[in-house]
Image (cartoon, rainbow, N blue to C red; front, side, top):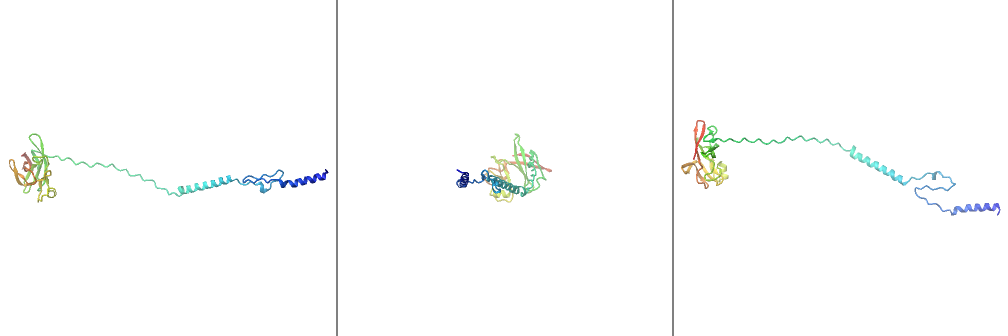
Length: 236
């Protein structure tokens, strides 16, 4: 074969080869590899941006935006609240002072003064000491006309404590209409009228029974006026 024929055959092979060369697949993010012996152009020399970097940049921008919104909402835009005012200390409540216990006079002896018993139906309690040493709670009453009468508050033949009931209590509790106070027995609802006399074991005694089931007037205690003093001397 002559040299001219060899040259023609080589040119023919070179022209045929590109037609049978398979094109390389294009993968996103992977630069196209240039065949050896070729010079890369400006377009092929620049590598495309990787999707990972796009996500990183976008995520960073979103994170910065969230931080800015959070700082604005809870920092700059938050209205400062005034400091809580400390409550004033509450002083401990002091217990109410106790009323002094009334010291009752003891009979036999002075139990009141005329000035203390000036008003009609004024009363004063006292203790009467019996010869055996026992004491009984009693009451002195100023009756109309300047008369004083004392009696035991212990119910005759019973254990109930008598009282000087007002007109209102006589009407509401004892169901008795009266014009002045009377002695009442709250247990049996017996009413005794100190302006009238009733039968006692030793004769007539102030405190006639006007209502209820009582057996006799209250036990009497004798009193005398000695100048300014009212003195209880002896008990029935």
